[in-house]
Image (cartoon, rainbow, N blue to C red; front, side, top):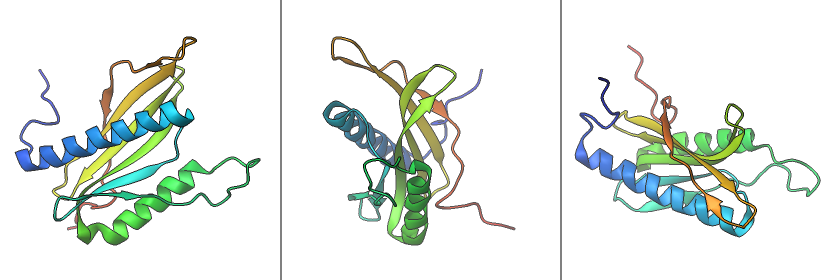
Length: 152
């Protein structure tokens, strides 16, 4: 029997992670309802526990050009790495497509300064009656980007 990623994680760290997941999911769902999509953003838990929203502007705001979402995510991580000394934990929220299930999903990639990393993926769809549906989320592994492992 395999354990949960939560097993053995400090309760204060879990509280930071749960707060980031809950806030990020609420923000993403709100944007889906209002706009039908959303651009990547980040949330950071400051050392004092305050949540901060971090956003970057797409390189090309031309209505005819597609936004380079991967570049935006890379820029978010760049900013987060530069400011990591001011944060306890971060979450990068993005709108992704899951080809294996032919559906869209909210991805929330969380990293804590203690080394805990986890990514939650919340599939979603919009039915013909105008309702947003959110099937069961799942957990994916997440690499350490903001606080990379120390090299020996």
